[in-house]
Image (cartoon, rainbow, N blue to C red; front, side, top):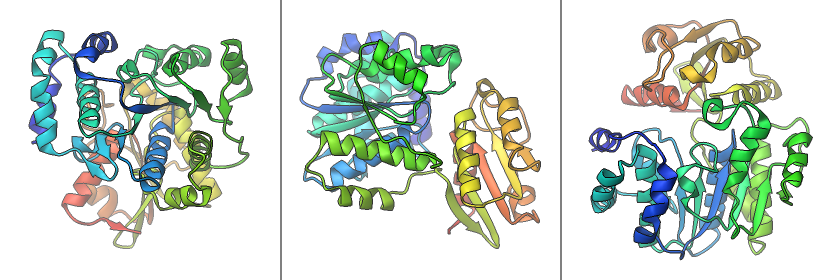
Length: 370
C-alpha cells in the first residue's frame, strides 16, 4: 500500500500550498484542537516528539503528532498517542478530499497535512504537536493557528526557499506566530544577534536556559522541558525527564551492532547538524574508523564533506533514493560494512539515505540494538 499511496499523492507539485489549504480550511477544519507548532533548522523533530511524548504519557487525553520525514512507512508521520494512523484511515481520508486534491492540484505535503488535521479532528484529540516542513511563515502547516509556537534553532538551510541570511531565515521561522499564539518559545542557544532581532520585531519570547558545551540533544531537551514547565505547569518535571530519557528518536545518534562492528546512525543533513554530530562524537570520545555519507544536491555536499573530514578521512560517499540525491556509488553492505575491517562505522547525512540503509539492513536481518 505504501508505494502505491505515495505515488498517488506525488501527482502535483507543492505550489501555493498554504493558500490552497486556507481556502479549504473552512470546509474540513474547525477550531476544537489546540496546537503546538514547532519549527527550526535542526531539532524540530526531536523537540516535537519530546513534547508529544510527555503530554500523552502524563494525561488522560489524546495527543496528535505530525512529523516528517518517515523512515519505513508513511503512517509514521501521523500519530495519536503511541499509535500510527492506519492504512484504512489514510486511504479513507485521502478519498474524502480527493475532489479537492484534483481541483486545487494539492502537492504531497499539503495532502498529508490536511489528512493529519482531519484525522486529529475526527479522533477528537485535545492537543496536536505539528512539526513544520520548511520555514514556517508560508509552510503548509501554518494553516493552523498555534496556541504555542516553538523555534529550536536558526541556521542556513533551504536557502533557495528561505533566504541566504540568518535574519531572512528567522523571518520565515517566526512566521508561525499568530495573533492567537499565547507564548513563543525559543532555544536559549540562539545567537545574540538573532535574539536582538526577535526583540526588534516586537516579540518577547520565553527562552530555554542557555547551555554551554552541551550536545544538541541536551539543548532540545531543555527547550522541550521549558515548553512543558510554562505551558503545562501541572506536569511534574521528574515525570517529564523520565519520559524524555526513555524516548527513542530514530537516527538521533542511534547505536547498533553488526557482528563485531559498532554502527552509528545520525541524520546530520546540513552544516549545523554535522557540527552538532562532531560535538557529540568528541564529548563521547568516539572516533569512527569509517564514515558512510550521502545527502541531497542542494545541501552543499562539499562543505559537509569538509566538515566530516574533521572526524575521519575515510569517507565513502553514496547515492540515496531521493530524486535530488547527489550522484555517487550505490550503498553496498558487503564491501562497506560486512567485509570492512573497520570496527566503528558512522552512517550519516540525509534522512532518506539513512532510511535506505536502515531498511535494507532490517530486511537482511543483521542489525542488533546495542
